[in-house]
Image (cartoon, rainbow, N blue to C red):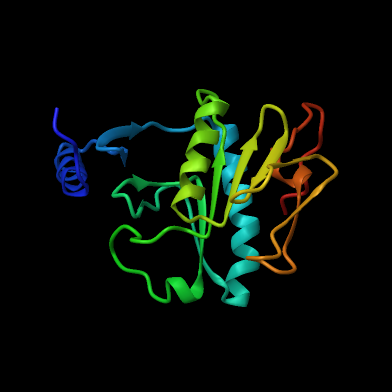
Amino acid sequence: MPEMTIKDVERIESILSEADFDCQLELEAGKITVMGPSDIISSEVSLEFASQLRNWVKPRRLGRVFDSAGGFILPGGDLKAPDVSFVLRDRLPRSVRYFGTLVPDLVVEVKSQSDRLAKLRQKIKMFLDQGVKIGILIDPDELTVTLYRPNQKPILLTNGETLTIPELLPGWELQISELWPPVFEEDEDYPNQE
């Protein structure tokens, strides 16, 4: 089978769209992968991280934050869509109606129920090898956040600890415990809805 290209991905997406089939495709080493939906916990954790990041970035006009639908064409020709990504403003002053044709500064992968940690670590390593400055792996099963930088030992953070990324986001802090979905007790009263 010949290696697939970005143009092939675009053609397949067009055909699937015309058939009213909505899915996300990634391209790696000439092979197309169909990305299925995530479980709701990983989705909520991803949204919480993206919200906290965007709430810091946007008013300071530091750059752009993207969710898992934002695809990036990497230097080797792969098309990848991290769960959350961030690009500094001087690297992407304007958005275009196409995939990003640059390497994000920050990528975040959130382990879903069907993901394997080894494969996610490989994906983050691939991003770092392509020029990403910071990679983050969030594991909702273990309630951990692992911070990756090129040529450095990973840093494991747990509840009670704070994530900071001073080289990209000076002053930003995220309490690890804030990432996890709330638990509502059955006998808990609803707030007054007046």
